[in-house]
Length: 301
Ligand code: UT7
Image (tube, rainbow, N blue to C red; front, side, top):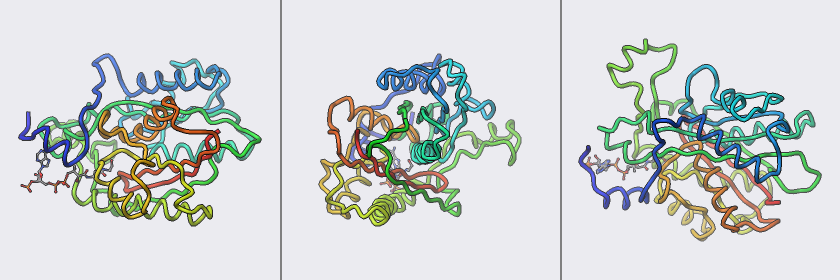
């Protein structure tokens, strides 16, 4: 469809393959499947949930929130439900909100999902974006605990001045939908090179800030679970931080950039592969549209 090659995609991004949702699927159906899998692993039922948060930039609809669709599909009728849209940083924002609610003591169990169906928002004639993104979902259950395991600290940041660098312009206020479809503003647009340079800096500064605020030395980090946007960004970060690349959980090759879903997918896959041991210190780090970024320190339970 576009003038590209497997060599270009693999060498410039690290992506080898990715998943595209079937016509019958949507962000909420992927999110529901991930949510069910997380509940099963946690040994909980939907009735145990107090809150469902879905991080997504490709919601099924503007209203209702995708989280409400998931709440209904799961039958989690005792849970509040809402979406968070901070693009690829969405999972970090959602995780932070969930852990703060739990810390207040008012909330016991939260299902946090990152889910995207970005293939529906791709212009398959735009080689700058159509080779990058994939569909998927990942989920975790956060629960109150008396131990030290869990989310220990997180930082969040935003710089709205860079809002034009990653955009899906279609919304409710700026222009009528009919006009948007005519001028293509329902497609995702990325200023790749500028975002690349910014992302390579912010991933490093976010990790450094998290370490500064927690007193953690860089060599005490067991695993970094980063947003999977471009393998070259992760190579740069590993070099700048002098952290071996094999401490970065990387699965971009198999899924492409799944935005808000990339961190929980990487987390779940690594956990299922038995890579994390109790007591391991994990740093999750995300960056993306907004511009937004965030990092969280977790102790694996
Ligand atoms: O998830 C949120 C955060 N997102 C990111 O962090 C994405 C960050 N950006 C990137 O990953 C990279 O910038 C891209 C993979 C998007 C692009 O790689 P790049 O090395 O920055 O390429 P570029 O945009 O500087 O373009 C270099 C050349 C251009 O051709 P000319 O102008 O030099 O003739 C592009 O037109 O590569 C061309 N190009 C392509 N060629 C073949 C752009 N896309 C393609 C393509 N196939 N798919």
